[in-house]
Length: 247
Image (cartoon, rainbow, N blue to C red; front, side):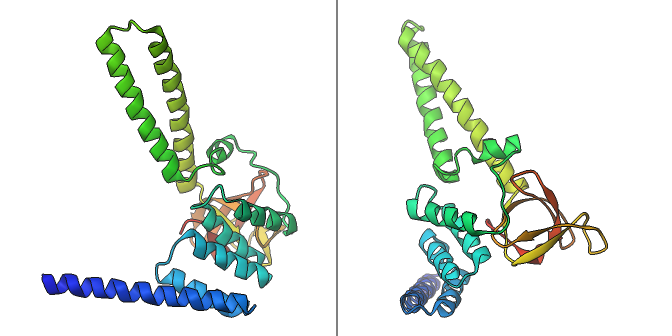
């Protein structure tokens, strides 16, 4: 058992050193403006399990410099899962949204709107932690007020207000969890994709969608995906043309 633990520790150490070496080489390639090599090395690090905001952000930068807006947006959106308040990251996302050919408005579906209210402020973990701590504080204060016999009017008011805030927080978290699992976000990777009226090439082509468009996946049939754009338009496209923000 002791030798197994040592071997496991050695294996983890080797993997960590290899990943760090790969990232160092990727950063050097990026500094030399060899963006294709940097992309390959960053992808290799991610495939090895290096899933963090910095790696996704740097990979997005490399793809952007290589003029691949679809992959740049995808990796920026993945970095956003870890760094929702990062100024540079949000500026880069806004820059791609201004450059892409597919122009969309803000979310028009009320559930999607509700789910995205906290996206630019908290990660899902941070939101869950805040609500968890809030409920603990709420019940502790409520228990103290019960023991005192509800004599303190200010405490009762605080409990009521806190309860309302926490209920709102639960609604926000619940809608966000539902949308992220049942309507996952994906990014169009191909320069131009024909959107079909049904799940197959025999259906009518209704319009064209372009790289870096952000869509929500509503349904999957074989290798076809039914999606919705923020402005309410939808249709079907093949899975190979998009990348999911959450793998």
